[in-house]
Image 1 (cartoon, rainbow over the protein chains, first blue to last red):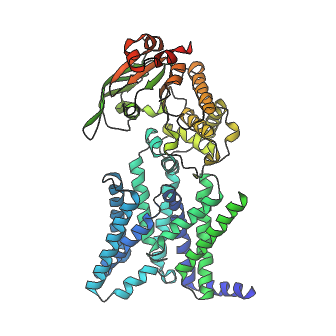
Image 2: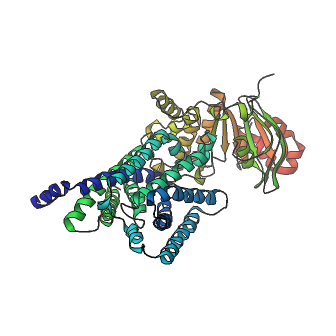
Image 3: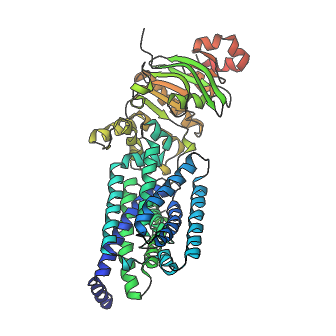
Length: 274
Length: 248
């Protein structure tokens, strides 16, 4: 046990570990807060779909020798609006709309990677991310995006709650449902883009889904669910980073596994409680 | 002449070019209890959705003699949808959280709830006899209790009119009777206008002061007494008219 604390102390001395913890905690907070709304609205896989689109946008950025985040933010945002429109106007079910845009994103990414060549290694590093290599600038960007997500959720909390519980009643209450939906989905695209460097395109949706569904197992009030999802996400990031350092495991995947453990514990806690 | 709570003029609603409602005109007076009946597909729910501005329509709808464009209808209208159509039994919210969400319509951005809002929510729950449920998760309540929570949500901002779309569909007979009694109490004692869509014609006959029979257009709209004397309604209901009219 003493050895573990020594290793944690040792890890904390490294600047890259400090950056990873700060960026990861902000990311976890933003993802988990949004996750509660997305999961309850049966839109949880949008994180997965948008992450696949970001695979294509990273490929485009590498092809153009541009910053992946700069290219990905507008394009993934656009893709999120396409999913929303397909769902609203084209009578395509939400999950099918996500699947459609997601498969298009993956296919485009693979085609660009195979035809352009030369940057396959860089591109595939985005599949699983590397939280330990985030730069100071990326930490700032993640922090700003996550704080924006939290701020918007605080400002629109009651509207989001009303829409999540009963969209029709929210509309009758004068809430601009379409506008709020658009805001929610654009925030999701922002947080997904900021998350691809941290856990990668393959795992970013897990940070949206897992803390939310773990919290949903335990608490009975809406506000408490959001707070607990945030707590789960932050703790899992911290434990995940230290565990990956100590056990020499990939950080992104370890964070997801810790989240999964939280879900299992929450699940059995609820069952035991009855 | 008293102010009309609702005034509908020549309302037509089309879905993909097909008329679901055609040329509907009606007036609702304060403290009326209007029961809306009609066969499946007769446009009952469409009428409610048009009144609430949820579907595009031709014609005019006025609440308290003002149109939608210059009047925030939501402050004066309480709405109770068909419960089972949307309620997620696992939704993480307490009954109080659901009830207090009824005041959102009266709030401006950024919406913030005050102590008064919670007091209003607790009062609405008290009226419906569900104060003891306030900290219970909505999904763990019985069908009748959930319906009362949703009715409390519709009442919390003290609307002048309650619009209800088949709210008793999922209730057992006992809960249904209790629900009707609550509505009647609100109508008689608090002078809340009730606009009630239902398939339950017998119960509508028992409580409504006016009956609206709809079949894509208005077939009959009048007082309960007029309904009982209407030969046209005898044609529609046959011997059933006598059963409906037997309440007095």
